[in-house]
Structures are given as structure tokens and as C-alpha cells.
Length: 478
Picture 1 (spheres, rainbow, N blue to C red):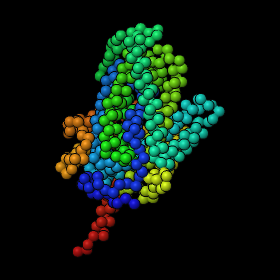
Picture 2 (picture 1 turned 45 degrees about the vertical axis):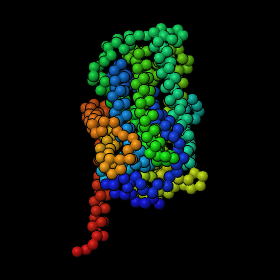
Picture 3 (picture 1 turned 120 degrees about the vertical axis):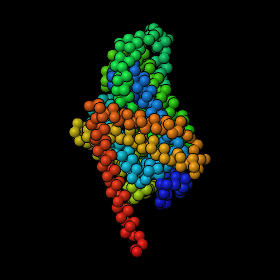
């Protein structure tokens, strides 16, 4: 059983506690590919069409702004995780920086986010598979996917790493191939193509047909597509050299992800008029069709299918490690701390089963009541990612100074422009939340997510009061 966590006021001691009883089966290649593929999902391949429809070619700027924010958050998280690697990542950092209430709140909110989104991914992948094999009902496909990935996560962690390595590798390869074909098409170097020039960037209302309001609307449409980067810092705790590996994974991931997102958007809006985009239809399919790639829709269906399964696998892993970390710190039932032995040693199987059990409930709600009960749950996690990012920034502000003073050698990866860029990221997160409140389409997400956060904070507060009373009750009598 791991020792009790050190005082949140002593992050240097916290970084030197007895190692967690998890295995260290993840290799550098697993983390690197997880960092690259963690955010390349259906939100990019399909959801980007909605962003283009509201921002036009200005979607390139929307992705630049949203991507820059995600890069800053990832750099902050990478700094703390390289200095103090832990399976709970930002939940542990928040506890050390702000107190138990913060670690409890951000940990449970993130866990709830993952297990709810897991249902969306499982249902989406099942819908695609049902289209290929209509004889098998959609619920049966959900059961197959959940069972397979539960089994993979119950065995050695290297199985999760291998799944994610190949899934992410396929997604990265698809993006790179798309960029290569797109650049060749833009230059007129493919058969039966002519150089397209800048007509689609400057026509149909110009580069900013909806002005900067459109760019801002585009940011709201795409910022959540960058969620998923956080899992690499959770996974780093189960690698052979956590501090070194997470630093390398963060360095290699942030700029390549920005290249993939911004580069592919630039290719799309250069090759096709933005007015031709239809929300809900993949702009990648439209581009591939336009340059004559046969079976473009089915190719992209396969890529989206893999992206959904990859995200399902990563979310199941991330949720199990988060709830395990909470149990380690006494913020979740202690029974979840038991780990497996033997060849699959170091796997928190009870934490995996607890996460997948709630995931099954979420899937059931999504299949039976998609427009009522599950919609409320989805709204309740709609803005949680931004809350998590904000707490990461606040934690980094608190911990950076402390580590510089007590153990500067731990800062192997440093946040750029500290503290100014950290404050800028916090301001940007606040601005995005404020804009979501003014948008009728996204306002329910902020309000429901704020309600969920308030509920968790209330529970955290009651726990603090209970613990203080318990301490006073066992203290020396006058």
C-alpha cells in the first residue's frame, strides 16, 4: 500500500515519495505516439466542417488561437509532470498547489468527463460498424468494443500502449498523407489538376467573411477538439523514466499537433470554397472526392472508426488511473487501490472495472435516452475541460515558484515566458467561457458544467469540514 501523500505545501517531498505500485510497461514510443494521436479524433475529421461553416477561411486563425491555448496548457502540464510525475497528473498537482479540495474536485470532474465521453465514442464507432454489418445490432457492437478494451486494460499496461501506438500511428499517417495529397493538389501536381491559387481564400466574402466574430465562433467550435492531450501526462507515470519521457513526449507533440490541425485546415479552405462545407459532413471527404481519390468516404469512415476506438481506449485508461490516484490520496474508496500481480502486474483492475461500469451505464443512457437524460449528462461535462485547464494554469503558477526555490533541478521542462504566458492562458480560458455564456448554443454547457463543478466543490467542502472536526475531536484536551 502506498504511503500517505506528503503535505501539499511540500512538492519536493511529494516528488520523492515511494513509487506507486503500478507497472512501468509503457515505452517512449508509446508516449510519443499517444501525445501525437491523443487529440486527432472525430472532432477534427468530421466536426471541423461546422467550424469552417461559421468562420470560412478564417478557421485557420481559429485553429491557431485554440491550438496556441492548448499548447500553453500542455507545456504547463508537462513542466509539472516532468518535475513530479504521478498517475493522477493534474489532480495531484492541484492538490499540492491548492489543497485537497482542488485535487478532489478536478480529479472527479475529469473522471466524469471521460466516462461520459466514452459513451459517445462507443456509440459512434458502433454506428459505423453497424453500417458495414447491418445484421449485427448497434448495441451488440457497443458490447463488443467495451468488452475488448476492458480486457485490454485489465491486462498489462503495455497492451494499452500497443493499441494506442498503432491506432495513433494510423491517424497520424492519414493526416500526413492528406497533407501531402493536398499540397500536391494545391500546386496542380496531381493528374487532371490545375493550380488553385488563392481564389477560395479571397473569394466568397474574403478571408474573414464573418469578420473576427466568425473567428471567435470558430474557436468555440474547435477548442474542445484539443482535449485528450492530458492523458499523456497520466500515462507517463507508468513509463520507465517518467520525468524524461513526459518531457520528450510534450516537446514532440505540441508543435506537430498544431501543424496537423492548422495545415490540414489551410489545405481544405484553399482547395474548396468554404461555402460548400456542410456541418456534419467531413471536409476531408470533400477534399479527397474533389481530387479524385476513389472511395474517399469509406476511407475516411475507417479513419474515423479507428479514431473513435482509440479515444475509447485512451479514455478508459485515463479514467481508471485518475480514480486510482484519487483512491491513493483517500479521495475515493480504498478498495480501488488493489493492483494485479503476476505477468500483468501493476494494473489497477478494480479501478478499470469501476470506470467501465459507469461507462456501460453512460452507453445505455445514450442508446435509450440520447435526447434527454444523456444530453443533460453531456452538457454537464461540456465545459469541464476548460475548468481543468484553468486549474492546471493556477497550479503551475503556485508550484513553479515553490520548485524554483526548493529544488530547481526538477525543472527539466520549463513553461515558456513564465509567468506572463500562464496568465495569458488563464485570461484566454476565461474569455472562452465568457463567450460560451453569450452564445445560446453553448450556454447550457457552461451552466450545466458549472452546476456539476459546484456540486463536486460542495462535496469537497463538506469533506474538509468533516476532517477538521475529526482532527479537533482527537486533539489534546485542555
